[in-house]
Each structure stands twice: as C-alpha cells, then as structure tokens.
Amino acid sequence: MTPPPVRVDHLVTSGTFSLDGGTWEVDNNVWLVGDDHEVYVIDAAHDADAIADAVGDRRLLGIICTHGHDDHIDAAPALADRTGAPILLHPEDEVLWRMRHPDRAPDKPLADGDVLTVAGAQLRVLHTPGHSPGAVCLHAPALTTVFSGDTLFQGGPGATGRSYSSFPTIVASIRERLLTLPPETVVRTGHGDSTTVGDEAPHLEEWIARGH
Image 1: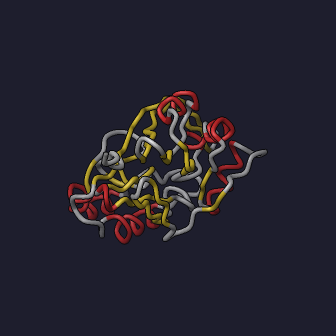
Image 2 (image 1 turned 90 degrees about the horizontal axis):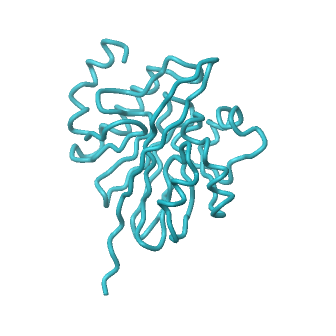
C-alpha cells in the first residue's frame, strides 16, 4: 500500500503576547507538517496539550520556532518535555526566548539554508529578519507552501514597531526571500488567514509608501 503523502495540519490556539511592557490577546496558527508516522510542529503556541493531541501517536521530529516572541514559543518547553522532541530556534532570537524561558535554552540552532526533512518532503530554512532578528520562514517546495511566521501576512509585513524589529529589514527580507518564490506559493502565516506570494507581491511598493 502506498503511504499517504505529506500533509499540513492546522490548529489555532489562544493566549497573550507580551513585549515592551504591553500585553495583548492573540490567536496563533500552529502548523504541523508530516504524515501518519512523523511530523514537525511549527510554532508551539499557548496550548501544549492541544498540540500534543494534534501530533497524536506520530513521532515529533522537532518543534520549529519561526521567531522568539513569547506567543510563538510559550508552549514549546512543555511540548518538548512531553514528547522528547528538540526545540529549534535561530540564535539571533535567543534574547527574546530568554525573556520567556530564562531557565530553558533551545536545543538546536536554525540557520539560513538548513533543510529539514519529514515524510520525504523538505522544509528549507529562510532567514528573514525584520519582525525580529532571528525570524525564519520555512519553504516546502513539494507542498507549494511557505510558513511565514510573522514575517508576511495577508495584506503586508509583520509588525515592526517594537524592540528588536526593523521595517526596512523586514521589507528587504520579504522582497529578497519570499516574493522571489513562485507566485502560486501559499503563505501560511503565524496569525490569521493564508495568502499567496502572487497576491502579495504587487503591493510591495504600497507597503513601503505607507511604512507598513
């Protein structure tokens, strides 16, 4: 029997995001990429139990953090402790990670060009700083998908008004690393609805003009 193809599972979890003295209620997208046997989790947000239930009896190969903001990493240690899976984070975001988890370091670094393989499909790490210094996206060519974290959303770049962020940097990241992907590539975001590269690319100059 032919095994089922790699697939993307999705759940939404709710909690808070805190930085620079403010706290906001947020809903986060949690993405699971794999098959019936093995899986990666992208952004373990808020609810380790719900994420573990979505993983089920599959082998969790790793917990990938697209960046170090607390709403994307708050459930990562609990999920790692429960499953034995390593936590992967770009080193430039460890300063943000330590704000939430001062006594628990990530297990493995992510670097631009790294390739993670699950169920025969590749996830290529794209370093896309701007929303945070160590923000990354994961490009899965076989799925015609990029997991953009908080770098690119439907309607524009992620927020850059808080510490450790830069609007010119995020625009450069999107221009050079994401809008160069095939236009049919589905952009699966850290919050809200998905979009496509082709839908967002025509609006780059508008974002620059309005500083967003």
